[in-house]
Amino acid sequence: MKPIKPTRSFSNELMDKLRQTGDEVADNIILQVFQQTEMVGLRDFFKWLNTNETKYSLTIVNDFVNQQPVLPDFADWKMMQKGMNFFQENQERIGIMLACLALPYCYAGADGARVLAKSQRIQNDTLKRLEETGEFIFTVMQEKNWQDGVAFRKILKVRLMHAAIRFFSEYHGSWDNTWGKPVNQEDMAGTNGAFSYIVIRGLRKSGKAPESADAEAYLHLWNVISNIMGVEKDLIPNNLREAFTLDKVIAKRQFRPSEEGKLLTKALLQTLESFVPNPLLKSFPAAQMRFLLGNEVADLLGIPAVPFERKLIPFVPSQLMFKPADKN
Image 1: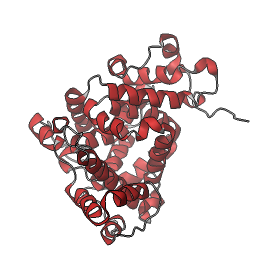
Image 2: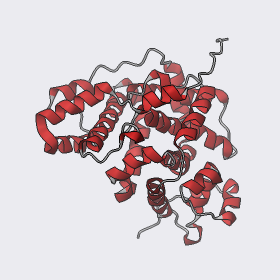
Image 3: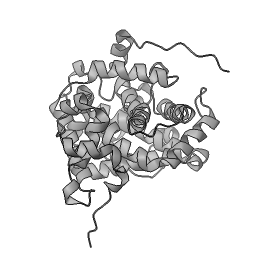
Image 4: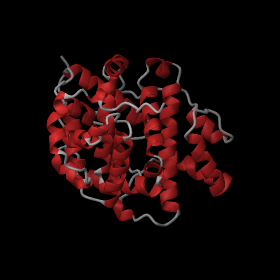
């Protein structure tokens, strides 16, 4: 039996430091792209990051994206496989958790939501952003994609995208550093925690709690993803207990009402409502969010209260609520 590691406390001093920290390796690449191609070239590069292409015209980018895939030293391949199997067996339920819990949970972080709102990528084309997120997750949840390097390249392109967003946000001079560095370490850790630990918590709340071993394996898989994505080890939880502690620290520090958070949540709700085939059930996405998030977080995001539907949420299979309407 492995000895239980003591749970780290994640002090405010540490979090304050990492809130002003980006990703030096990726940021340096973006700076070089800008120096060689200027802003027009950097915008074209950002568009390339949203494609599945693996070759770019600059050597420094190619060398980074197509580097030899190497797992971090803490990675356990068997646990990663178990985490991927858990996703495959529960992908519909996890999909609902991502859409109705993980994403709005991220929007509750007021300063982090500023970056998303300023880019206008989410509220202007929410469906496409959801599709991109879904494609990323399905890519990194396939064992073959880790074996042939596809998962690594996908993660590294997202890592460069984060660095590009940091550069754009600061370049135009409208960013206030009191908010923290754009797409900083705290926000990246919070986002990955929402996609891992918070999803597990949502599954538990929905009444179908995963086995502890499956939950730990799923967290471990996301820890590996976080490391490759550039999240510092100080903000990668060793286990679910640490994930719980880190989540509480980040939520206490960052969760508060914001116009940006409400705007992003409204755009997400409208998109999810378009997938509800029955007009009488259009308020179910909001009810699902309230049920999973809890009233406190739902209120600060401006999610409408729909008490009747909310009472039915535990008894209605979520996959029946979200199906594209027949357009024929």
